[in-house]
Image 1 (cartoon, rainbow, N blue to C red):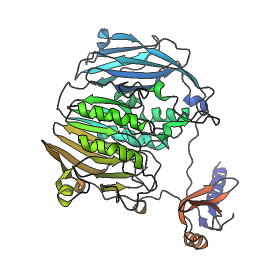
Image 2 (image 1 turned 120 degrees about the vertical axis):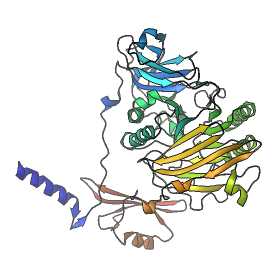
Image 3 (image 1 turned 90 degrees about the horizontal axis):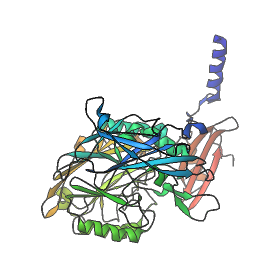
Image 4 (image 1 turned 45 degrees about the vertical axis):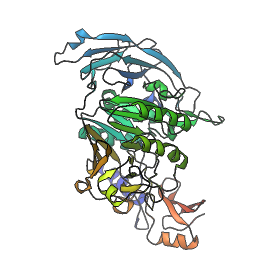
Length: 516
């Protein structure tokens, strides 16, 4: 036995060394059996959301096999007495058939069940469970919002989950709960998955968050990766076939965009979710009406595609030209975005086009944030927000982040944390009657800025001198990506080169010799 183990170790060492050269470590992605993501007769994928008025309404959605065609939710005011359920109310669920057997990457049939809890008491802890009358979930607790209150509350905001969801996003979302266990809801700023209709990726998303999804209200909006063709023959992209089955959201958005654009009034804040993928003009009219009518102290807007992009080559000019004047006119306080797989936070000046020294120091217009929570990373725009009529104050590369936003009467505190709980960015906004918000920079509390250059390498590294040799052979090109492959039939490097719109992909051996 010991001899066999020694032989195995020697083989492994030899596999990772060629001619004495230590090879880069390769990542072994997990494999998931098809059975893992399939529904059962027991409730799964339980997710909570709030209604337009979270003081009085909430929803719950869950999944079973298609055999379960009748389902219920039970809800009661929670107490420390274990038989609080004596006061429970039973509500029959709306059941929808999800037949995706013919849709690429979905290939499943299930039933989804949803219930709206209405006429709830404000500022009250409730417990609920879901099931078919025999098979029940555990009792799960949540708390309604106070009515018309300016008391302190917090919520979470995360950018793109998208890739390595169960592997890497799980640690991020769990760390966010540890940091803010009393968070009232979670803003998901699009790209919850990479492939819109992919059942495995949705299963990863639900497993990564686990009971957090069932206990803290979800406020999701779709990103571009929530849209994809239903089949290779389809001419247009479609919203994830799972989206409206598995999320039960306020239907108070523009006609035809229900549950992808909507809003919620939480205490003295109005938060508006937009769908930046489609129907921009329709949403612009809708959001202007919402902003003109509200008397809430704080206005926060979330959508996927940033008005001021964090990364190169991803400028959303039309979207910015349409929405920024509306946000300026109505004094939107904070905009929460995703898409760019890096971090950037900055602001525009109040009532003028260019920031001056006084504005930069102590007053501000809308603050814009781009963040990423998953494991896929892009580089920052090299010239910051130059040319955007905005000032970028803080940025990061190669860093998974979550944000805790706390509002207490006339003060909003924003804190961004890394996946290991380090404070990365922080600022306060303070309301001044009749004046722009006072801006308080708090980066003196945070860790140093992170870039690809001072963090664990995201891309694999080429052998010494190989990059310079490649660039001399391909003048004007830059290395755009390196991946080391260590498989049975090939060990070496795949290298992407870029020069403007020109792209090349090269195959190199372990010593850096080009094989193509």
